Image (cartoon, rainbow, N blue to C red):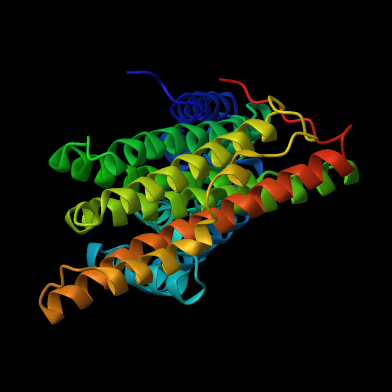
Length: 361
C-alpha cells in the first residue's frame, strides 16, 4: 500500500501544529493537532475556501461556548444543549463541513473554565486557529498533484478498457458474467474521473495566458469525459442486448462490427492527437471507406421489412426497440468523437505554441 499525498500532508500538518503550539507554550496543543486534520485539502483553492469556513466555524463554537458558560455554567447538559445550538447555526449558515470543528472548539472552551474565563477562551480559540493555520501552510507549500496528468491517464486507461470490451462483445467473444462485473467497476471509476475533473477545474492559474489555455483545455476534457460516457453507454447496450444482436443476419452484424471498429479507431486517434502523438494536420480517413453510421437505422428498417422469418408481433417490436437502442448509442458515440476531434484540432492548430500537452505516465 502506498501513502497518498493527502495522508503525508495531514501528518506533516499535525506535526507542524503541535510544534508551533509547544513553541508558543499553548496549554493544550492537542487541539491544534485535531483542528489541523480538518483543514487539509487537495487543492490550493479548496484550502482557501476551507480556511474561511473553518474560521467561521471556530468563531461560532467559541462565541456559543462563552455565552452559554457565562450564562448557565458548564454542566454536561448545558454543553450538550450548546452543541445542539452550534450545529443548528452551522446548518443554517450552510457550513456543514465545519460542524465537527465548531463542536471541538465548543467542548475545548466549556470543559474546564477557569477564573479568568475570557482569557482561557481566547487561548483555546487561538490554539484551534493555530492548527488551521498550520494546515493552510502545508497546503500552500506542498503543491497538489498534477490533476491534469491524473485526469488524462484515468480517461485514457478507462477508454482502453471499454474499447477492449466492445471489440470482444461485438464478436461475441466476451464472458457475460465477467463483463457484467467489470461494468460495475467501470461505473465506480467513472465517478472518480468526474471528481478528478472537478479538482483540475478548481486549480487556479495566476497568468492570463495560462488561464485562457486552461479554459480551452477544460472544454476539451469535459468533451473527453462525455465521449467516454457515450462509449461506456454503448458497451452497456451491447452487453444488455447481446442476444438480440446475435439474432441479426451475419451481414448486418458485420456492418455494425465494422462501424464500431472504425469508431474506436477514431476515438483512439483523437486521444493520441491531444497529447501530440498525432500531428494536428492529420485527419482521420478510415471512416471514408466504411458505411456511414447514420445509415444503420435505414439498414435496420430494411432488414425487418425484407425479413422472411417474422417472429410474434410483440417479440418483433421488442427486438427492434433493443437494436435501435444499440444503434442510437453508436451514433451518439460517433457524434461526440467527431466533436472531440474537432475541438482538439482547433486548439492545436490555432494555438500551436501554447497548446502543447505533456502527460506523464
